Amino acid sequence: MALLRLLQQPSRCLGPVSRLITQRSVRQARKPQATIAQKLKHARQSLTRHSGVDSRWLVAPDHHLSWQRLILRPLAFSFAVAGGSLVAGSFINVYLQKYHPTLRRDWQRKTRNAIYRVLPPSIGQYAVAWLAQPAHTQFAHMVVALNVLVFGLWKVPALTSMMHFHFLHAPMSGRLSGMIGSFVSHKQFWHLAFNSIAFVSFVPTVYYSLGGMAPTAGFCMASGVMASSASLLFSMATRSITPGLGLSGVVFALFGFTTCLVPDTKLNIIFFPFFTFTAEQALVAVLLFDTVGMIFRFSSLGHAAHMGGTLFGYFFAQHHASIMKQLNKFSYQVLN
Image 1 (tube, rainbow, N blue to C red):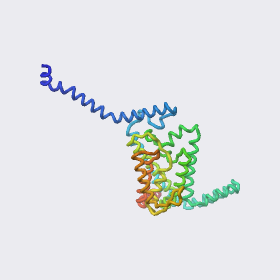
Image 2 (spheres, rainbow, N blue to C red):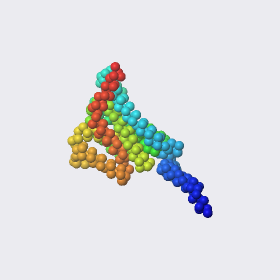
Image 3 (cartoon, rainbow, N blue to C red):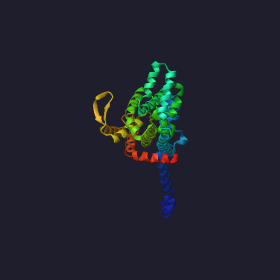
Image 4 (tube, helix red, strand yellow):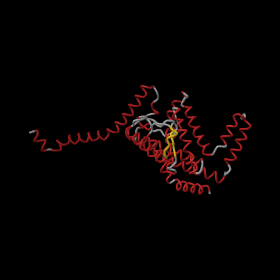
């Protein structure tokens, strides 16, 4: 009789079942987000417990664990910085050409005179020799000097917390400063040395193709944040909390730019100078290596950042003439 009454009133029978299905659906829909949040929370607690350091530099606080803060905000920031850097580089270059065409020569002359007055001849001769270097070499040396300075700051114990927060890109932290500070930051000397040598090697083509120091600096800034964005997207896709740092994203962007314009350029490895290959061959090898590295994750290298920088530099080089033409035209209109 009880069964007959339930069948005669299906709402009483199906109501609890439908509620149970609804509750399970809601729990299943919430499960992926809860899993990510729990993983990040566990990683933060484990880091604090085992190393005794402030883990906020690696993983964002619980109330910041949202897709808007971890993905959308950093991506919007990186595109704004990239676009603003390219526009600013073009504007500064046009301004100097229009209003201060002899600025570099005047600066060299005044600096040379100051060196002779202040420094002893044994030291001053090296400074004067540096002033006589081509503009692209001076630019490359200044970027390397900035990286050396940041490398030195990592060795100061009192600055460790600040360096972790602002000179390390931790994708799950939601911080924006690390997307810029990380690509002038190195903790190991060999990392700094390799990136510096490669940077100096690839700068000339980019420098003279873009037309000066300011546009090249803008391109380096844009390629750096684009490489950080690629690393961010890959980390989110794989739920990785591994941080990254180094100039390699910018170096690979310079490499991609150079390969696009002069694919037959001969390259070699520093330890094997007798083994030469073309830039185009190196590009294919690099993309394959980074693709395999992203799939199997067999090394701690920033494969996503390397690939992001390479592709950005290559595709930017394909359209750099029209892009710089439009940017310079806009700058002239603003100045007029």
